[in-house]
Length: 402
Image 1 (tube, rainbow, N blue to C red):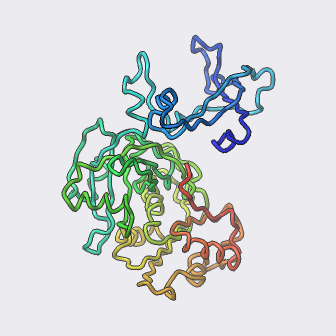
Image 2 (cartoon, one colour):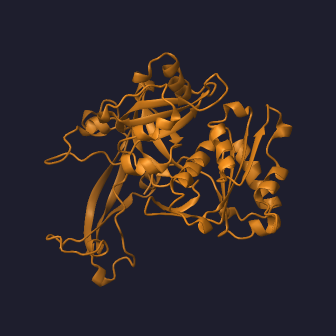
Image 3 (cartoon, rainbow, N blue to C red):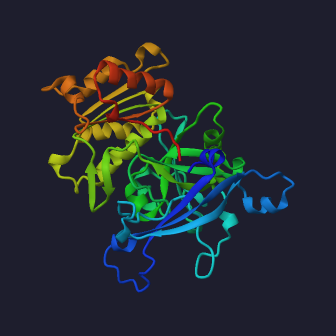
């Protein structure tokens, strides 16, 4: 339930999946280990304590409110009794859970994790070619690793330095974090690195463009410009999203399944970062995907100035290597008449032998990844649906909710 539902209705249930009787660990499959459910029914109340409420303030531990759950009923439902009609297979702990405390567990105080797990900067590389370093890629690792690197490292050594606890499951996911130096300002950034090293070692990279008036983006760049990179520390709340992904599933290197026969990417400005994450993922898993199953990949990207587009030379390299079958880089120079419009989308979607209608007709054969400012995405989406007949279910965007 959301906090709003708790406020409006109050009724709540905590649901647990496990086998209460399997103390000896003799269950042979994950399904057998998760056959029963435990229902804790009751009422949930959202508390917003006053500043002078010392008792409740101690419970907050840095939060603005807390949920008080009053238990009224406990029910165990066994699979033999019908259960809930589905099986639950554990997929790991929630990325937003703090470390456990208590006997035998990490003794780090829960208060230390009230605003996320601490991460430090380990690498920083320019991501634009304009000479003004408007765009940089920042690499982070858990603070306990204490692995510091120079901001002058070339991009070829980045992957070897990414270590730690964040585990991005699919390309295109985003990390949500707080910045203690900015009063725990909350921000979400697309993970621009491939999830291969994230899944195995846990570090992550974000590509950030200096934005006029942007508190967090300017602070990150200012610290590097002032040779104060060591002061860049964040607290990671978790990794989520994944809507902007070209993959139906990702379990590299065991399996990586493309979601469609044809994947087209449409982006503006720093919205190219999830596209880069997907392209890097395809590069990582090229040897595990049958060549016949590799989708046709095309990209249309626009920016006011292309020399400020993150890793634009990498995009051109993907075109030269044949990974990207179609690339259209549009430089608007601030002129609305130069923006991405229907002709660009027609060229992107059209298969020479089939045409736009055939390419747009099947949701199973087409996936559109769309990312950029709302003022860019809305008209693009309407043109795709209304003018070019693309099924709305084929168009994926991300709104950074978590």
